Image 1 (cartoon, rainbow, N blue to C red):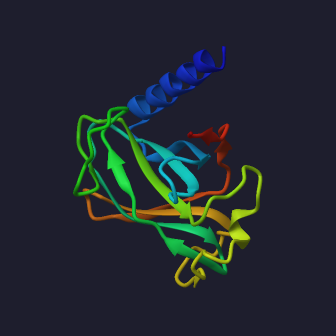
Image 2 (image 1 turned 180 degrees about the vertical axis):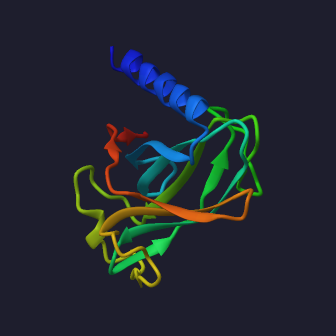
Length: 169
């Protein structure tokens, strides 16, 4: 049932974009913690942000901030075409593509226990002070983009769907 609702939501979002020709928007965003894997790999949080846009426009993702208005970090991210695993190395969402995905991982060191507060782990580097963020931003993500017309903008993503953690052996 949840997958059906998710699919209907995506179809509705794509319909709105196709009909309106409006500016791009964040369709949905999620975070998912993971633990385990090869010895010493620790774990982290995977962030996925789905961007809906008109098929007629091109868009470049410039940078992504994760944290809050005081401290955080600029994320190293990947941009994927539609729902595939095709990486768009230049971070451009091409014409003809109406739904793309931005994905990045915030790792934490050591071998955390599921449910532990990894943000207080001593192995984590200190977050850097924030500067130049939108005034309306408090916490979450800020995604900066440039449209093919040269117009720039940003999305403030404060609500992330929290997915069940992945526990790797």
